Image 1: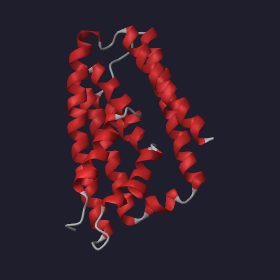
Image 2: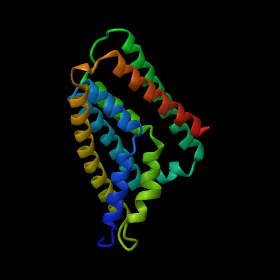
Image 3: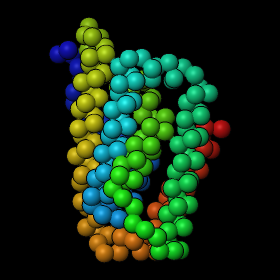
Image 4: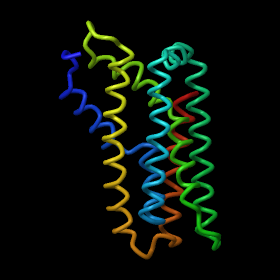
Length: 196
């Protein structure tokens, strides 16, 4: 396993976290609510990533990736979920409602990540490019996956801290919820459109 290409792998992982996607949107929305909510959303996303990693190690991700219909279905479900979250954010911007619990933010992060087909493809198509061909593939995929999850935890902690600091006391403001709602709907519609 000494042949693992660590530097290119770390570069790709950091780039993947730097490009905003569904997980980023959920973490930002949570962090605007509170630092704790953002952290819980990020933790949920990383638990989802662990599920994808385990699926890749045992070969389920490869099986799913070979069925374009399955990938498209996951992408459509993920897009529709984000549209629903966006509508919910817009609805909350028009009425005062009960504060979301940290558990709910965790579930949002988890669901968003599980329904993200890019996570499946990352473990099937991208991650194997960095392994040692002479080493045990499942073990290396697991090791690289653990490093990916750990990096993500650090990234989401930093994002949560930064956003909660910027959002401050305006976390539940009408304008913030509207902006995030529109962002969710836009990403969701794009995911559904790309799947069709």
